[in-house]
Length: 348
Length: 158
Image (cartoon, rainbow over the protein chains, first blue to last red):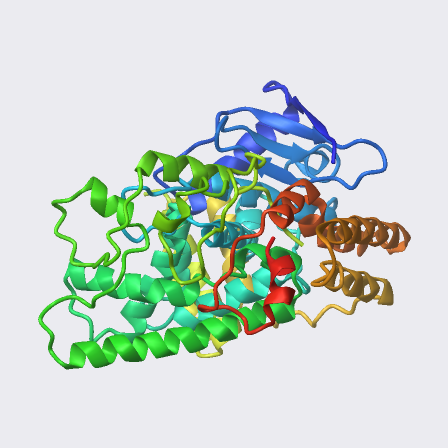
């Protein structure tokens, strides 16, 4: 697919309105990070080809929005002009702001998940947030008449919504998870979901100390890092629910194991494998109790680049790649990917 | 004291979940708690939009939207757009064809429905990404995945 873009003039009304909307998105859910470069681009698509909606480029920090589907609708508060097209446009802004306002990777976190499954979840979460906070965002921004219909067909939304409901509870609510995940980093979304499980379902089982909490989360992450996360964006809702149901079974089983383990008063953290053992390598004295029985190591910088670019590990490195049970990549050299891969707004 | 928007937003989301999804909340109580988060000296703008949200909590849920047959036709194409079987080239061709068919349907749909139909193509329009993913499927294992024949698995990866 072709396509080009042009920089939106900072002096234009459209640019100023985007800046205002971006600020509103930040005010309703502040985050410690702002990666937007200040450059807004208009995405143009050749005649005859369907438009793209938007993208955040983590390398340049530029945000691109469709010249036809999004930018014309950033008109500012104006009663009577709202419609479904404007709702979709505002949701696109919120989606891209979500990417720009958090770090994607977390190379120093033992529980970071740095795989394609995580990239799939990052996309799913950005859209989940756009839907969940759309009402507040639109009203606070002065567009009270716009609306967004809940996505009916795509699998990722069904999976994400179901999973968040599964893990949420009286101790850590859906709203609390949403706030936490908006702050990122994206590679920690699985860990943040696992934290909800520990807080809500293992409240009285896992000791409050960080080592135990982190180990329990690490043990729960593989149950959620389903191999189909990356493909759910092009799958129907039924597939999303199927994935969520499988995750439920795996989560229930793992919760039982952890509960059983701690009821034996073991005196040490659950023996879980860290999703990101390179972080342990980086900090050998951090006192983590999680085991890494295969002794796998990998230069963190290499992982970092491959994860952020969405590339497969280089051939030969696969045996040392962190595995979460969903499988490691096979042979084959690095794959060129579009730098937008992890952050395009893949909605439907 | 200015409005703490983030705090209000979190409280609103929690109240909304309780009222609309969980059905385990008293709307008037939730509304009162939310109003208490808006200080008297908040700006007029902040008072206005927070009041709109708080009032909306008590509104009955809108009836589920009735879509036209065109919408559901596009939905069926979307669901079938990602064939499990076939070569990578065939899958990519199918995705491209689905995008075009959905846009054609959107062009025939009512003005207030067309954007929603076009929105379905969003996941199908990033063909350059899907193509790369399809051409470089990960090696799958049996752990934690769907129980399907291995031959049918490879095209699942995107």
